[in-house]
Length: 371
Image (cartoon, rainbow, N blue to C red; front, top):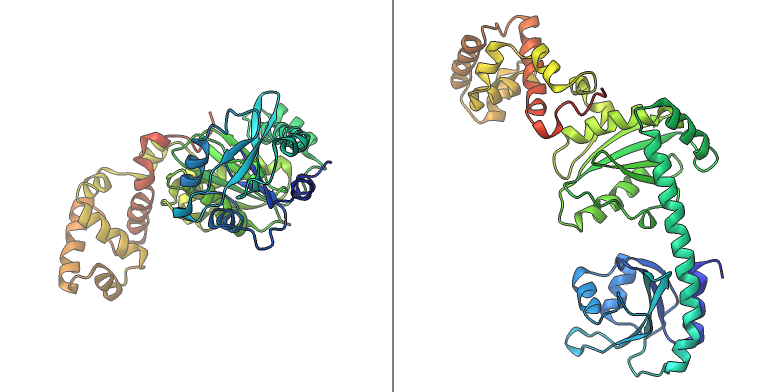
């Protein structure tokens, strides 16, 4: 059998019990029809396409991750959990997943379970092969992001025919260095982990919002905030490197839980053109530096300029009286030595205030421009 869904269905038929196949992280890979025999744990796993952390911890406490043969998981009436049989899915002494059979009355005999183990071996081989193929593709995508043209050209040639442009290139940034499990994303999506970025290559035939929602959820399961940046369209594989650079700028300026699109960044695109030190020297003046030592005044200036100098709307947004706003604007002009009725001075101040929050994070210093 060359299909994991077929293996799950055959196991259910052979053992006459509702079956699911999950990977080692307890994400649903395949499942057979269940009829009336189901419990809340199984239902939740099918609906969410993964088991909860509590379920995983409870089942792993029975030693299934190291088991080489069937393991019985007893019922837990307090949770409405039926008894089940776990058949480890292992290849070359590596556990790739688990075949689960609901068997509350323990009708499956040891001999019957042994008869089903070759199905687990076959599933493990397929999952190991898929993992290796995904890893190979992940390295090829990483080569597309290299600073050197030769590996980029070679990777583009290797991936031609495997995926088709145009693409959306997405960068998901989290504190966690663990890569995304590519099995849990659409098969057409290529992924890699490179320079602290979770990078997704999403072809136009695949829904970008759905893919990003799924990827965000998988990362948030690790209790990690997620910042997402995207760039599209990326017309060819040769353009992936530049699209990645743009998407990572968008991710850099996104707040946790937010998705930013390069095409809507405006002046923040300048973060792609130079390192932080050069941008600071170019956009900041002694006056703008003095202003930023006064957060209330800096916020007032930023809001005023974002609203195109609309006094009424600025006062309403800041929830202050108009006379208070006028007083603050005079203080801003005194601190910066800039005149807010002068277009060039307004541009200088607005650019400095727009970029400054993103130039102060030393953890990202100069990352948007290659050496």
